Amino acid sequence: MKALILAAGEGTRLRPLTLHKPKPMLPVAGRPLLAHIIEWLRSHAITRLAINLHYKPETIRDYFGDGSRFGVDITYSYEDRILGTAGAARRLEWFLSDGTFVVVYGDVLTNLDLTALVRFHRERLAADGVCRALTMALYRVPDPTQAGVVELDNPQGGRVLRFLEKPRPEQVFSDLANAGILVVEPVILEAIPPDTFYDFGHDLFPVLLDAQALLYGWPIPKDTYLIDIGSPEKYQRVQHEWPEVMRQSGVKG
Image 1 (cartoon, rainbow, N blue to C red):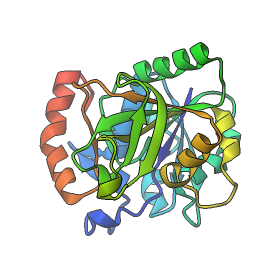
Image 2 (spheres, rainbow, N blue to C red; image 1 turned 180 degrees about the horizontal axis):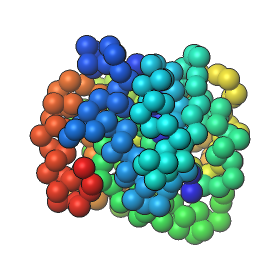
Image 3 (cartoon, rainbow, N blue to C red; image 1 turned 180 degrees about the vertical axis):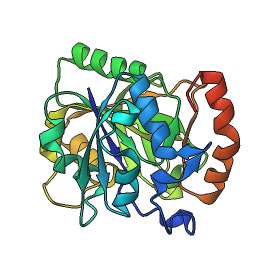
C-alpha cells in the first residue's frame, strides 16, 4: 500500500515559526513533524510514499532525500501553484492508481491504529460489494465550525450521510469531524478534475455524496492521540503531550 502526505501549505497561522520552513518541518520532540508521520506510516508497513511540495520545498527534499535513510521510498510532487488536498492526489494519479492508498494531512500527529482503519475500510467494501469508496478517520472536536463535520448511519462507524466543511453555528449537526487521514480507492481520483485547485472537504466529498459514491467514517478509539498542529496554541501543547504519548505507545522518538 502507498500513502500521500500533504505537505504543500504555507502554514500562515503558525507564523513566524513557518517563515523559514514549511509547517511539516517544525520540530516536535526534537524531530520534524514529518519525520514522526513517516515513522508512523512505516510502523504500519507503508513504505512507498508521495509528498506534495510547494512552500520551501528544498527544506523537505534536503532533509529526507529519497527516504532510504528512514526506511521508505519517497516520490516528490512539486506544485508551482497549490492544487489543494484532492488536486494533489489527482496529480499523483500515475503513482496512486494501482491500489488502495492512504492520504495523511501533513499537520496531523497521531498514534492512530492505521492498520485497523484500513481493515475497517476493506471490510465495508467487501460487505457492500463496491469499489468506488473512501473512508475517513473521524474525531470529536470542541468547535465543529472549524472542521469538516460528519453524520454517520452508525455511531460506531459506517456510511456518511452528511458532510459539511466548516459549517456556520446554526448549521452544526455533529461534533464528529474529518481527522485528516483517509483510505481511498483509486477510482475516486476520476472524480477530481486535473490541474485544478480541488479540496477534499469543500469540493470532493459533496460531489461524491451527490453521486451516491460510498463515503465511510470510522470514529477513532477514545485512547487514540490525534492533533492537527494548525495554531501556535496547538503547537505548544503538542510539545508537552507528544513525548508522553511516544512513551506510552512505544513510538520511536
